[in-house]
Image 1 (tube, rainbow, N blue to C red):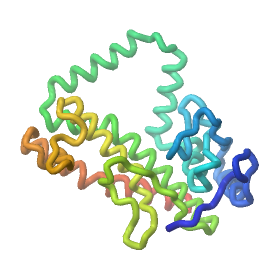
Image 2 (cartoon, rainbow, N blue to C red; image 1 turned 180 degrees about the horizontal axis):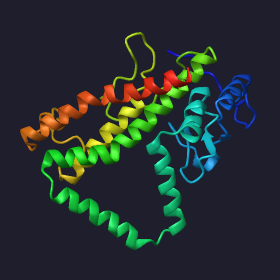
Image 3 (cartoon, one colour; image 1 turned 45 degrees about the horizontal axis):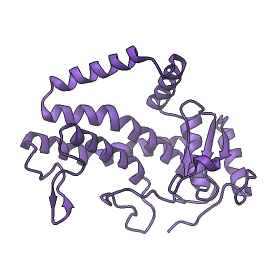
Image 4 (cartoon, helix red, strand yellow; image 1 turned 90 degrees about the vertical axis):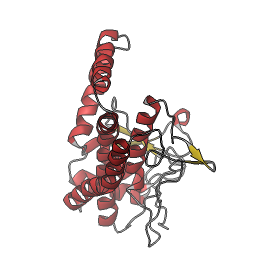
Length: 254
């Protein structure tokens, strides 16, 4: 398993020598991100780091849980986002400018989505929810993971990804050589997108149960053969899809 490399000195805002090296390296590529300790009231178990779309210049890293890999990951969200990541920042800012009572805008978004889904077949609804809700986050997270790995390799740390606990345990967390699988976290959003579809269809997350284990779309009899085929296409293509984005960013910054 990878060795933990701290970014902050204990539970403080002072950087370790390794943290200083990361900031210096990121600055060479034009990063202008402030990495701050996650405030106490925002900390939670498993919450290693966070970037708010409304405050992308100040990313949070929990010094009691996270290290250099997480800091590098959040720096990439902040300073080197994908096109879809940048668009999400812009949309979040625009929503904030309109305020929480922009009911007309929220209703228009809801009505448009409802209209699209109402006129679609079940496989098309699955694909639409997956592509609109899951894929943008998957790609942005794969990009940040690839960039973080590029930086930690440049610094001589190798794969120091701490991993991420994925509910359900359907995604293998380590590779055959015992290294943390850096694609497991982006792929979590694939499963969240599929779960949103299942909830919309009234089936519930995971579908039916067999001996206490979720059947999933692939073998749940309440889904049509066409929907199951679409599900398998999504599952089979998700990893290569995020792997391409991870490799693209890794190559660019390595």
